[in-house]
Length: 204
Image (cartoon, rainbow, N blue to C red; front, side, top):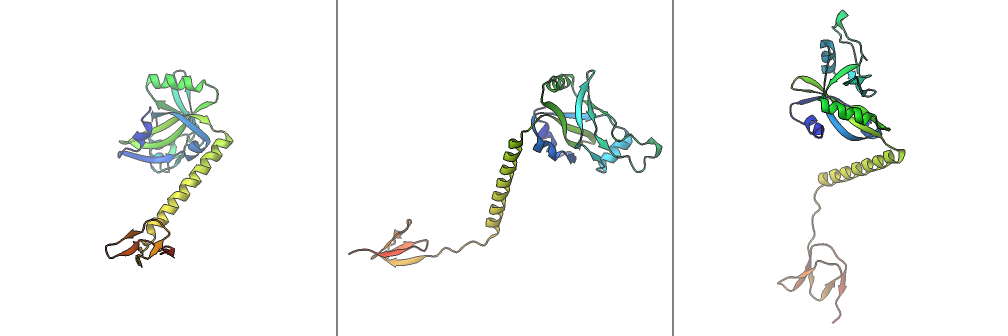
């Protein structure tokens, strides 16, 4: 879905886990929001954050979409009714979305990976993305951009926290010229500048 990312930011969303490595290692070309077919103990473990989507991937098989290798730890109070941690789990998608995913996965170099696991109105949802592996120079460029953005944010934060510098006014006789820009002649006949400037005597 084109608006899957916007749905993740909605006020009724409770994010459980984000696959941060996905955005570093892959370029995400398409996003989909999928429901999950889960057992009761799996839902409880996910609510406690006892899960991992970092090594998981999705595939389409016999007209159905599945999430593979998604690790959900056994529920502490589940007893013999507990689930298998890495069992394949069915994804709930529209028929058209499944067909689109199937077509994408047949393209060389593309894969489908989980991006975000979250609850929406009490139901577990998984945001999945069609991903293309980044080249080494793409990763370096991303790192450089993130580092630059981080430096800019730090500089702006320091500037906002620093006390405002007091501007210094100087009244200089009109017989002197101000070498910097911004000076103006006041009504009293004195040359005024908002900043300290180099002052040179005006030739008579």
